Image 1: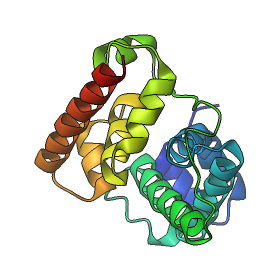
Image 2: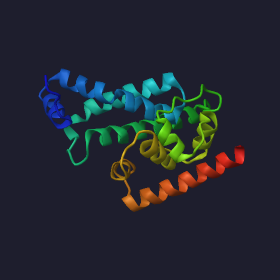
Image 3: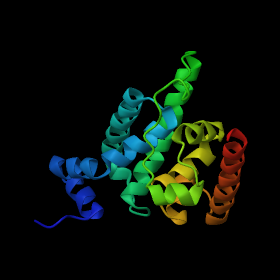
Length: 183
């Protein structure tokens, strides 16, 4: 059995092949969950956000134009849903405090972690990430924790590659300063 491309899976799902959409979900569910978790810092809420992401993706599948990759499209939906979730919790006065939650399961490989900050204290990294604004945090998560390229991150954020590079440079500098000050 050969693996179908994302484009083939989208086409099959549009032809009412629910198995094709299920295959897309299985392909990206971990990534969607990880990105959501890095925003909301709560496993149940991240699971809820993930479910909403795939529900919206299924409902909007006919609108997918193949100008971007499916992964990029799903990351954009995940970003929007995570932000909406945080706003909803803040509006209700039930702010999700990442420092009170369990330490996030950052999905970065050890070599990447050393390259980014040369520190392995994930709790400090989590606190430093929480201090970044939402766009900068997403840029860092997508680029360094999920391994997306600059072009993909720019598409998800809806800005140019130059702006994305500048955002990442400033974010990493801010993280380094925060971490060096806390050590």
